[in-house]
Length: 64
Image 1: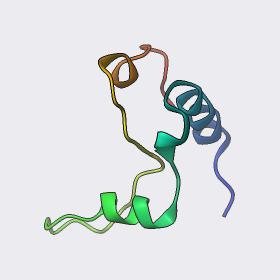
Image 2: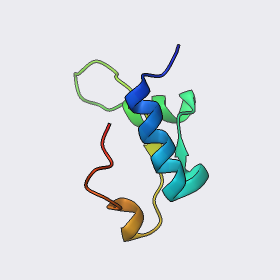
Image 3: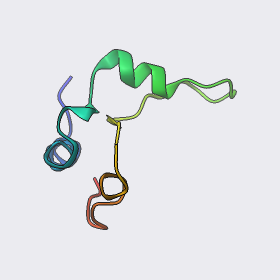
Image 4: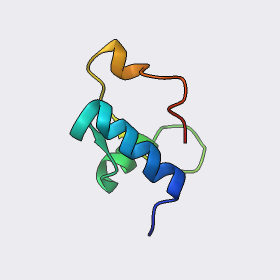
């Protein structure tokens, strides 16, 4: 499945900030998309593991 252009561009920007700590690995996405809620399982497009405050909030225009 091909990634939408907006998601791909955002992933590139995230990778520039956090490196390999931004992932689209299916197993990681599935793990972060599950909950005990009654809602349907819907994994995120990307999972990021930030280490600093600057990585959490680098720029207000970092949106897909």
